[in-house]
Length: 165
Length: 159
Image (cartoon, rainbow over all chains, first blue to last red; front, side):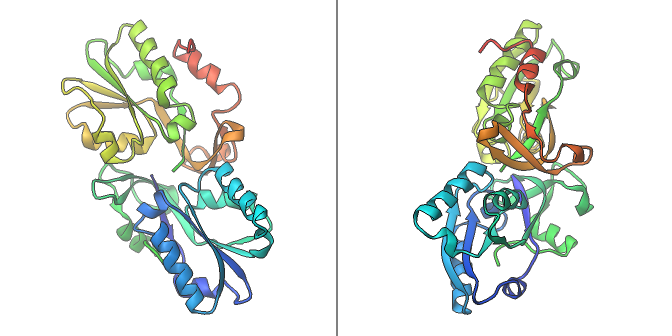
């Protein structure tokens, strides 16, 4: 289970977008959803709705079961092309891990992909469907352990955010 | 959910096991399967190699995703096993440490980091490495020929 933290606030996200941008909100429905609801259908729909309410041109909402599958991302692009929509998207706001974003950058070299998350490491999904970070990356300065650390606590220590925008 | 792993050499694994103990193998069918360090085929190979080498393998079980506690709880590991060989990433081993208290958990894989799965390359691409694996970023696991090496290192490869 990938433990993802959000790196920006909603206000900061808006600062990275232009009202002329044609936006797709893209969400992973596996790890990102389990990371305090950073991703998932509800987070995606809420973010799209807030952005539209604030005057941004959200054209698409795209939910992928898992965004860490290169061919899955590529098939989404092919679907956009088939629907004549691909050229009508300028920016993708991904609610996914940074590894998925790396794959998306390869598939969508013509789109601006917002850098909004950082992977803190690997974790375990506990009995309450909550992701617990057990094997943090070195940059976090956190120690690996069986008990791990919950994402809100990790985010607080790292000056980042957990959960949806 | 793509952790990237590679197998620990077979001899290093058996050095951590005892022929007198009852052993269960639990193999993750998610990320480790993509790296072919888990899944059914790798598990069958490991099981037959250990049995051929005189180890007492009493159960071999597949788990959908070893890093999800409820998935791992659903796996039927006999109460009386002494050790569990986890064919999973470090997260799966963490979950096993929590669930299989009183049993020795032995890892069969080393986790290199996190990446994404690319089926056309028949493996997972490492993006974010753990310490010691920075030079592996961008590489695909299993790499070219790794399958054969992994199978031969376990003495298997007949499937």
